[in-house]
Image (cartoon, rainbow, N blue to C red; front, top):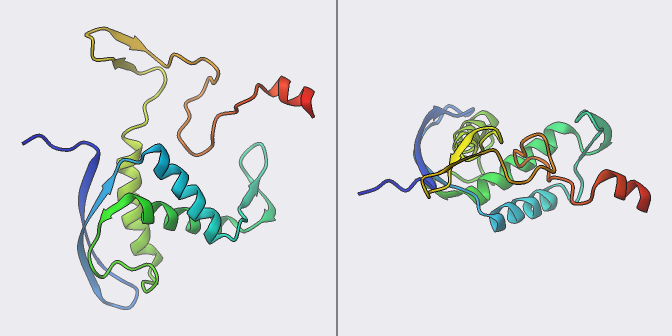
Length: 161
């Protein structure tokens, strides 16, 4: 039987911050476009519509919610959407151990990142020919999914402002 490459199953065996041993099997799925929209909505709901405002360099500006809360909201939203199998004890309304949540999140994100390739990496398109990079040259750096690529050219956007 061929392994489903759009899912990953992993085990967690850890003692939580209350001294309880937590052992369980998790399965995470590769995110769809709709899943990414759900994550964005859930993250916004968790932060009451607020987020950590960052400058052009990606550094927090002090406006919006703090960086740690924003990351926690992102992590919760991601896990709620991406986990398709989890043990009975996995309940983020009850668990208080952030290290345990980070372990599960780390496993899930490691899997998700396997689907992102450098634009310079060669890709077999299935026809036997190999192409290099991405057919779009609008961005010179790979989009890792953390921030959407600009839809409007910066010069056009500036002219509209």
